[in-house]
View 1 (cartoon, rainbow, N blue to C red):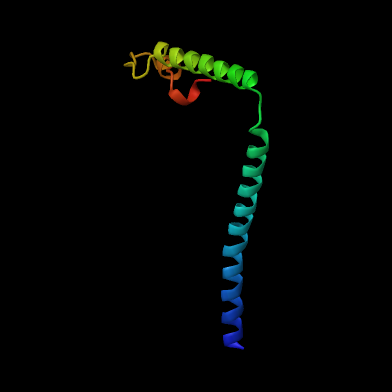
View 2 (cartoon, one colour):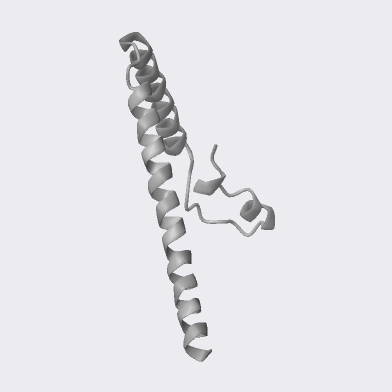
Length: 90
């Protein structure tokens, strides 16, 4: 009985290791298939998407340049709550 319990626990451990791995492999292959099927976009749509990404990246870079990080807080308690942190930016 003891050997049976140990072998059953070992089998369950292998099963719990194997199932998520198989699921990740299946899901990854499904995503790759969808990407390959959607890879036949027209060039005009791709160009528009690239322009939009470039514009938004430029806006984000300008936002980061305008934001003042690491300012020394004056003695005012409210200045600490008004400080800008990177994770608070949109």
